[in-house]
Length: 246
Image (cartoon, rainbow, N blue to C red; front, top):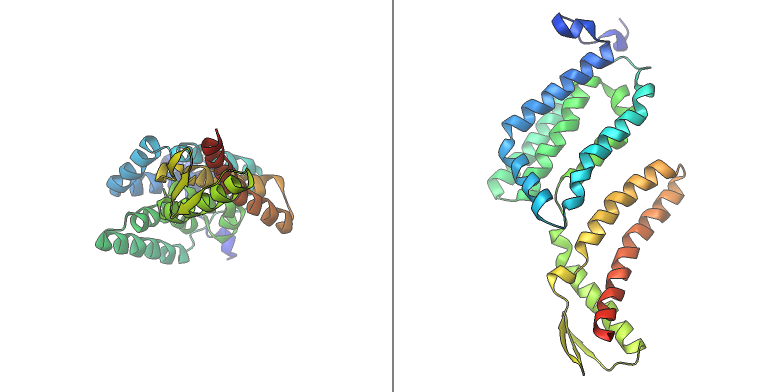
């Protein structure tokens, strides 16, 4: 029997659906169960998406993933779904990441683990060919994880360095000590809120989407991603300098 013919058997209400629709419904059911079981972690992430301006852009990520799947839907019809048991290994690995985060108290690991369970269930239900066609939407789920706070200290230092360089170029005498910039007009601090992390994280998510949708060449994609990372960092330094200059 060819591997693609090992599809999930149709019974009951699911029997009135096409094999792809049945498997999609089972994936949705599996996701609903996982979200219910790990509701505490999903609720914790949702609060960060809603309450923190650094992560407000994540509210759009589920809609973006749905749009990406919709774009590929006509291609998916050419593949027969099948149960792919290596998906259990992926699911076990995701659960292990969650357990490590739970025992260590590291929220980033817990959140990464519960998000990784979603594509693992999809792989188990859809099979390798369909997962290959959905590789980017599944990988884009990484942006559901609220990460970036770890970048605040280095971004503060980078912003302070850019600011002092621009301040000197504009003819204003100034000295920098860590994140503090001393000028004749007063002492300025590059605070955590001024680190620019919210712009950087949102731009990385947007840049990844644009690079995949608008470019085919990997060279152009990498160049665009480099610009998507550099531009918000430089722009934030200019913003901080302009505050001092004004």
